[in-house]
Amino acid sequence: MMGLWFAQIGAVIRLEMAKTFLSKRGLWVYLLALAPVGITTIHSLVELNSGEQRRAMAAARPVDAALLQSVKPPLSQDEVRERLGEPHNQWQFRNGRNREVGSYQYTDGTDMYTYNFANHELRNVTVETRDTIAQDTNIFASIFQFVFLRLAVFFGCVGVFTNLFRGELLDRSLHYYLLTPLRREVLVVGKYAAGLIATTVIFVTSAALQMWTLSWHFDGTEVSQYLDGGGWGHLASYLGVTALACLGYGSVFLAAGLFFKNPIIPAALVEGWESLNIFLPAALKKVSVIYYLQSLCPVLASPDKEMNQILKLLVNAAEPVSAPVAILGLLAVTAVVLLLAGRQARRLEINYSTD
View 1 (cartoon, rainbow, N blue to C red):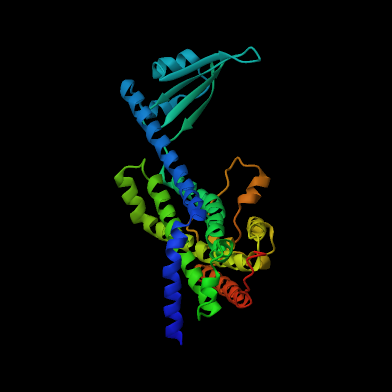
View 2: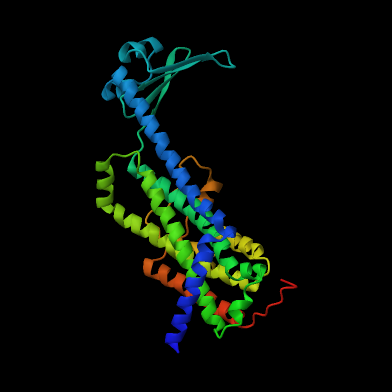
């Protein structure tokens, strides 16, 4: 009997794959998956352009980095120019208080130094350092946890998994499955597996592309050192977390498509619950998918130092659990939800006049 069930699951997967990957209703899922890739690509292009500009300015008028670091208040505007030479960029204007303010900008080809003046006296120096892999690691952690998982993967799973049953009801084609000698639980597992394969392929590819495009503006040596120093482990962790996100969210929204005629309502409720996870008591935190996913991320996104306290609360992650506990927790949640979905499928009746 088990052999027959597995054969039937395989048949359902084959039938569903084309519909899942090529469904017109699901084309926006691809755009959703590509949105974070666009963010990382733009970041790399900006950094590449900025690096080229700094190198060009330094080549035209070289300035030693040690000399740039030695210039500090109090100095006059003329003294700064005497020490460093003609600035690469400069601004001068009179503000609303009738004070003459301005800035000189110099670069050593790597970092950008901005010397700010008020009434021709040097007030402060700001340094815009070259982007590093360590900084981009934190940038990617923020994009992954607060844009990719909570928005792209979440709503992508909403679009794919709720349509596995609800979409066929709208297309008036679900009865073809129900007329076959096929257990409803087998149908649920087969459809879920097809949706899981599709979302995993789409969003794991997106996560890999994000890391690849984010590394464009670094030279090969830097990237190799990062990968050999733990970067491969980070990549594997992020791809694994993405697959687990599809597994967890997929089961929830497949069940939503069976229990609710309008899956947007449960999707909104789940999104609200996931967003409020950080405010919940410890016991309730575990009744969510994002809690376990964040525990498995290799780098926890940290808030900006200048961010106000309320926003810091919003981005602080819950106390993570160990990786085995997180994985088992996700698998347990998925198994329970699929069991409930299977039971609901057994009571499913088709009435196209009302659906």
